Amino acid sequence: MLKKIEAIIREEKLADVKDALDEIGIKGLNIIEIRGRGRQGGIKLVGRSGSYRVDMLPKLQLNIILSEDNLTETIEAICSAASTGEAGDGLIFIYPVEEVVRIRTGERGREAVMYPGDIDQRKGDPS
Image 1: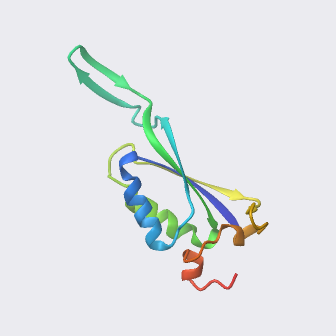
Image 2: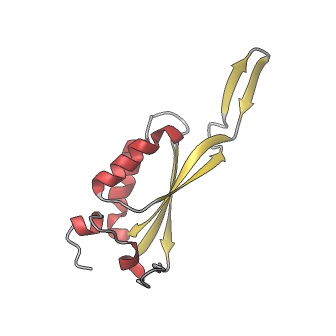
C-alpha cells in the first residue's frame, strides 16, 4: 500500500531534512511554503514601539508519496533532521494513497513513485 507523508517543518531545517531523506534514498518530494500556528501560539516580538504577537509563522510542508514498507524509516529521518527540541518543530501526517499514475508512462501504483537509486532499489525491491 502507498502512503502520503505530509510533514510541517521549520524553514531553516529544510536542508537538513532533504539531506536525511536523500541519505536513505527518498528522491521524490514536493515543498510548499505555508503559514500556521500550533501549540506555541506564535511568538512575541519586542520592538521600539512595544511588544506584539506574531501568531501565523512561516513553515514548510513536505509531501512525499512512498510505499508503506519505507514509512517508519522515512518518519525517523524527518524527525531526527527536523528536531530542535523547541516548540514549533512541526508535525507529520500520514494518509493512505488509493492510486498513483505517472502521466508520462502510465505506470500505476508503486512503480509510478519509484526513481532510479531510490530507497526501494537500494533495498533490492524486485518491483
